[in-house]
Amino acid sequence: MTTAAERAASAEVVDDIVLPFAVESLSTRGRVVRLGPAIDRLLGRHDYPEAVSKLVAEAVALAALLGSTLKLEGRFQLQTKSDGPVNMLLVDFDAPSNLRALARFDKAKMARAAPGEDLLGRGHMAFTIDPGGEMTRYQGVIALEGQGLEGAAHHYFERSEQIPTLVRLAVGETVSSQGRAWRAGGLIVQYLPEAPRRRADFHPGDAPEGAELHQVEEDDAWTEAQARAATTEAHELIDPTLSAERLLFRLFNERGVRVFTPTPLADVCRCSAEGVDAMLRSFPPEEVKAMVGDDGMIGVTCEFCSTKRVFDPANYGA
Image: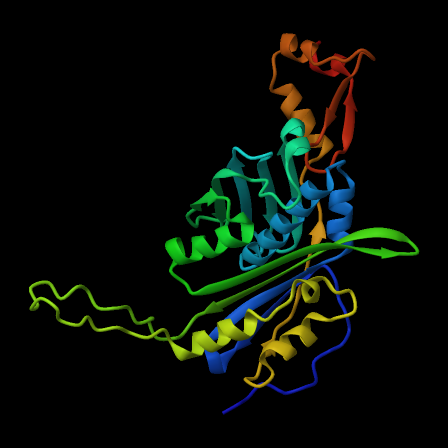
């Protein structure tokens, strides 16, 4: 029987990655995401209030944790629609690496929001998975009820996937001689035993009144894995001096943890001049004419990356 080679946990800090891991002795698998320059550049393209930037970064970290399981051609999208100050979040993850995101918010509601207040409010969060090729597209929807993104993710796995799952998200800023920079991190830990998970018995139906229902205890392996993962501190997920491997070693070294090849992450928008050109050509000339600005040109700005492109209306019959 072959075994994985043991080695010391690397102390090298690598940002903008998703690191998969497994703790076979606890039937547990998971991923750690570390976002540094990528999330700082992504947020730097927008003039979001600080609280909105933090929420966007959380959503990006969550999308990276969930979308990174897709094949090379797959796409994952996280979207919220709600009645809070931030009425929409949208994150696209194009496998294996590319992330883009945007937020829409009500400035008046943001001005009235108290520090630490839930900015999403009530509504829903949808996860859309497009595996690519001829595979079926899937969407899961969960209610937003003031529990935040982390709580909503737990609710989703509990109700929709029925996979015991723990999620941690963290966002913060570092301050150095070069200025301030955003960082984000996340951890997902899931109980995935080879055998089907045991379920509690059905109600005994016509059993005598007062009969004691048979209770099945939660698997000890997951109880331990969850307890260990729950000790993760927010600062550990974004600490620029703590590697993801060292964090996993701290959590699971007594049980043995294997890490796999990390996947790099990048802030890359899928917008293009060719795509905008094709869109403009799909409109009749009279509608294109209505898009012409005071400078006599058509200006189109991408909501995701804030890239502005200018087009000559004469090329579109306007």
